[in-house]
Image (cartoon, rainbow, N blue to C red; front, side, top):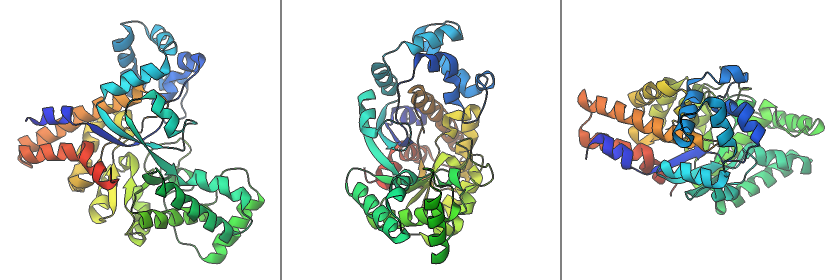
Length: 366
């Protein structure tokens, strides 16, 4: 079977995404472009990202060749459940692994918006922030936090996830007991609902990695670009190197392809056996940059450790844009590698099946 046909026909396992949510009519008609950029941009500038122009074209496919304002009005009037179900059906997605930390729609509630099988992933910072107000001492908090993670992983959750990159950065260190205790007490004394202390955040991630290892499940890390409050320097995945070596028994997934540090992420993935590389969010956000992103990831990283995902959130159109962009550009990259003699056609087909589905099935024991 030609490479292109394999890529187009392989069902997707989306190893990192978020729920679809209902949006107000005003949100769609006035600020829809915000969902197609991670930047803190005005609507005028957000409307001129290539990712947003791609969704305007998608809306025109669905609602007719109308001006942008009319397309947004028609989008605002859809029944979101049936519309979401229709769009996700176009992607040929078999399973979605859904982060329960954002938006304010649970993975179980998301199931009403799609016929795709939903598996939940638990965000560790959210869990910790719910527990801190109820525990005066560090040791009491630690026991409750570990017990909680044990419980969710024994139930339906298939992985853990941390957003430490967007809180205090990826230079996740070990701290001595006195420093951790002092930092925890300070956080408790000035509690505002969000952990911004690097010592406490680092400690939480170390605890989560140990629990993930004990259950044999992955711990996902946001890396590279994402939330606008993340410092663009401290999301470089190479900051995690010592942490990754210290937790060699924990499968770790670097999300977003580490973009724009994709080659660095590929280097880390190629160096440490417990590290896997997800290519989401950059797909489809960087649009014509997705093909070089895939190509750079393949320079060093084993093909068996690369994973498809959309990191779609809130709006179902992102699922379609990600699937279309990734399938098209994966085809281009693999056909070029075959044409240039780097791989056989049969091996390229195996790579396609692995990245789109099989690698995630193995990693998450699906």
